[in-house]
Structure formats: C-alpha cells, structure tokens
Image (tube, rainbow, N blue to C red; front, side, top):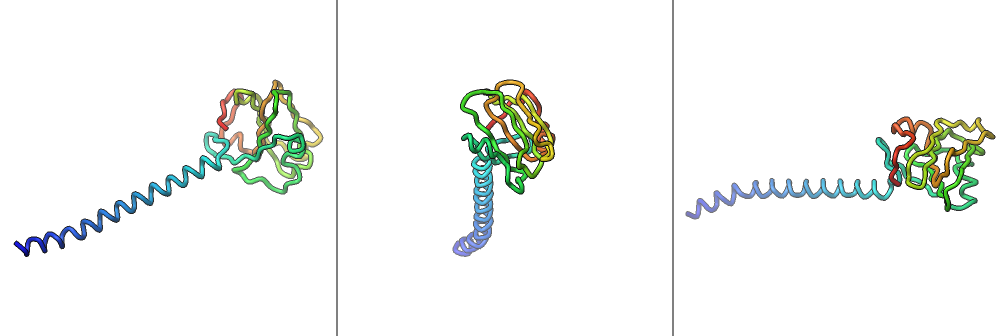
Length: 158
C-alpha cells in the first residue's frame, strides 16, 4: 500500500504543476484583457468603426478660438471636441493650423450633420460652417472620416 501512495504522489505532482500553470496563464490573460479594456474605456472618448480616439475638450471661448492652431502635429488617435452651451451655427477655419483635418459637425442627439474632409491649412481664410444648429464639432486627423466610413446621419458615442 505505501508504494501505491508514493506512485500517486509522483503522478499528481506534474498534474498540479500543469494545473497551476494553466490557472496562472488564465489569470494573466484576464489581467491583460482587463487592463486593455480599462485603457480603451478611459482613453477612448470617441469610438468609431475602426478606431478609438482620445479627445481634448474645448469648452471655453478661448479654447474654441485657438482650437488645434499653433500645434505642430496631431496623433492619429487624438482629436478635439468643441462643446457649445447652446445649439448654434458653428463656423471653423484653419487659421494657424499646421496639418490637415477632418471636421465633423454633430447635433444635440450626437448625430453627424456635416463632414468636411481633408481640410488643408492653405484653405485659410475660408470658413466651413454648419448647415444646421450644432452642439459639438470634432476635429480629427485628415483621413479619419474615410478610414472609419463616417457618414452624415451616423449616430456617435462619446
């Protein structure tokens, strides 16, 4: 009888190691997935079909006036959202902007009402205005609207 117990202990030790390795791997995977999800939720202010964007908020008149002007670059996964106290006609231009942008006008229910794509800094002083009252305007790197198949009437989540 004692020999059988020794044999069982020898056989079960590798099984325990194997089970511990599996449990450790599962715990690591859950942790990595959880951290990725947390980062996406906390860094992702605008989720489009193929991309997640971190948005800088422009809520004051000074922030609205300056916008993304005087910056040398804009990361592909970043942008700016202009938030208005009241829905209004909103006009934008490329003054002091050093890179091309896509500009997206969004109404009070977060539905896209207009998109201007690939606006060049050389278009200044031309102004681009909303056709309807706007509650939000989002500026993203040029090409973002096409890369995400963004369209007028699309509902956004931000």
